[in-house]
Amino acid sequence: MNPKYLLMIAVGSVIGVAASFAGLGGGFLIVPLLLFMGYSAQKAVGTSFLAILVISVSALLAHNKLANVDWRIGLFLGVGGIVGAQIGPRLLEQVPTGSFKRIFAVVLVGLAAYLFFQK
Image (tube, rainbow, N blue to C red; front, side, top):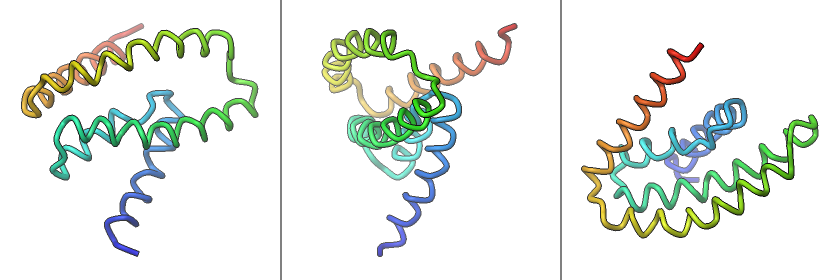
């Protein structure tokens, strides 16, 4: 097996732990990794969603076994997310990778600051 694929499995394992622990989906780690590997913003985000789908299904099953899932609220959020998920990729097509990196960094720093200073 290609060493690159073995590395991706190892990194995916770490991301799976982080995502299922924090509920952040893993994209905040996957997208920067793929950008670092030379992917365009559009391909990094799209590829990240495939990985997130696989990770999320596994995490959902694990959290469900522990009775930590509110199915009703999750499904309502998901229905709204379906609408937004159709708009987001079309917007991203209009954003150059360099600009995306800066926007993504600002969002991550803002989120980190919010979480750090929240009481």
